[in-house]
Length: 159
Length: 126
Ligand SMILES: Nc1ncnc2c1ncn2[C@@H]1O[C@H](COP(=O)(O)OP(=O)(O)OP(=O)(O)O)[C@@H](O)[C@H]1O
Ligand SMILES: [Mg+2]
Image 1 (spheres, rainbow over the protein chains, first blue to last red):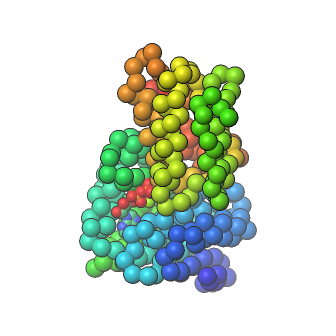
Image 2: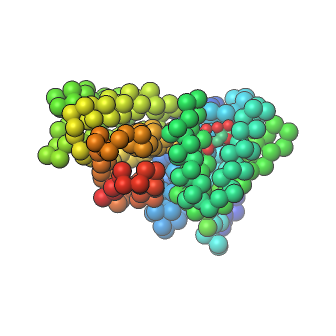
Image 3: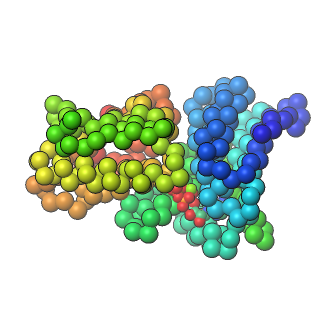
């Protein structure tokens, strides 16, 4: 784990670890505690730590390769926060990501979350596909993704 | 032992207790639900509760989340799956799910009320 300061103004956390499920809870607490110091609003810190946890779950579950990478940027001037995960992924995961992303981006965040919940509850293939809709609704943030070759970057900007 | 004869779930990070309540049955979650596949514990538990409650004609189940620090999205799916069962039961067997939330836990304040949109009238949040 590495905690660093890019400049005197911009705080950021960068964590890289081998994809092990048990590290997620630990990263979540760490990010939460870090943000409790760097931003005033505790509710926001909770939401950001939740978003980081969901994105990390995905990066651990769907990464091909053994590097899980998360970045949390804190921009003090605008009070904006960006959480992003970067990982390699299979064509199949990328296809699913594009599909879910397209679907939830078409609706307002509450409707998208509730319809993903209903779909998850009724499907029989065991899939959940609720995480991205959840963080978009709970944080009110702007969810984005970038795919280059097989490298996926999923990020959320929380204002 | 509760009237449904359901054993508690006791795992390292999560404990789930089922007790009788004056109105029916209560489920209490303590800890964190953040494992990779929470359906392994949630699906059998909610199946047992749903079937038992209908069999005994219980009309209210309270789900107490006050001591649940974290619930991941797959865990939310587990709860949604339980609630959605109520869309399939006929009126005689219907029961109400009362969700008790902790206003100091941020995800509970934002996510738990959304569960009321799944099946009209089935869920109350307090
Ligand atoms: N970092 C990622 N790398 C590759 N694929 C991803 C990544 N994040 C998401 N996906 C794809 O997008 C889908 C939707 O992700 P989302 O987090 O919404 O749901 P989920 O992980 O399937 O289930 P849940 O989060 O509810 O447990 C995933 O099933 C996966 O196929
Ligand atoms: Mg997910």
